[in-house]
Image (cartoon, rainbow over all chains, first blue to last red; front, side, top):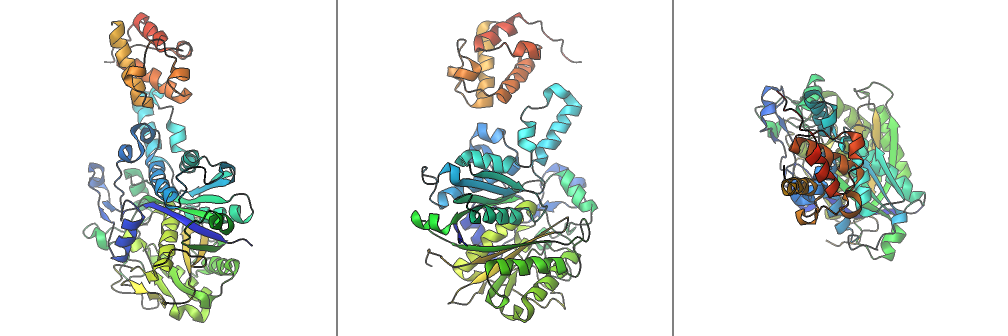
Length: 418
Length: 85
């Protein structure tokens, strides 16, 4: 089977405007979680989040920006960085007929939906913007990214709640392996830090309520965790067949070696506490990648800081790796970034790729009192990976609905020396 | 309202919606063929004109507004909509 490599990265996150600033902040153990300054937050039970500050007209142009919901705006910002990073922005490098897009989102253009609803009620049907549907539809981020790069192989959208962008990366892997495309831009975008969403997630008891210490609220695997912190942003990866990347002399970050999917079939929101469905996804991903548990040096955990979810995942990792989890360094990036929902998997994929490139695992912050039965080696400071030899890592994403998607990355074919 | 005021108002709306330079919005220019206005943007422009000039532009009249000059003439000839209370 043909190898699929990563040749470009782009992101806008609560930790930074681009990939280098986000990665530096991750390694430094920064937090992207802040109080929500907007007046609407004052009456909410949760008044903090991991927000992205975006001057969309400045980054995208005034006319383009006003035709996009924020979820698409962040996707476009990440696209511009990833496409240039891959050396494809010059044009005529990628054949449009062989170029695809697969993006994930969990919630899509909700800000547009809510604004149109307000307009409808307050001003009547004739004042609802004709741009409402193309801005709110779940496939808008993928469609706008596809238009921007002229993609004609495929433009697809994955919607699987918090597993959406890992699902998108798995779909992109399929497109490339099946020979339907040479280049696929894959990842995810989310931007729904709104009173409606904050209230809805809070009513589920899913959010941390640590209003007095927002930066300490996201604490995966800690005994004092009390829910996730809502985040937003986008992360995109340029995936390419090895043959295509090599033929154009592209710089290669590493390899997306495999994907494993499963479903809990347990509950609409609660993970199976045994972690057995997640174990299946992990094992299938390793089998797909042709790696064994002893090859894995690093796990980028989904770990959202919810009481039930984190321990289910810990059980799944331990079960899937068998006795080989001792030499595996785990990290939980949502401790720093909050939970980007449908963009989380892509951001964590990006972090996993950079961890293998730099041979360092970024820290999990706020892990002051690890669960006594955790059984995992979670990095609380930036930790080195083995200085020599091949590296393989897994990145997990799990979503409401019981969707489990695990990806395997390796540093095979890497060309950027460090 | 005089022609120049209406023309300037339409030019500002077209610029806001599509980014076309204000100076390019002239009476002989067709919205779609000359000014790159797509169908959704045309709907936005019509509604923005209704708000700006206080007139009603029914959908079947809007589809006959091919050039900027057509829109100026329609707005000039349209009865003002009474302001909402």
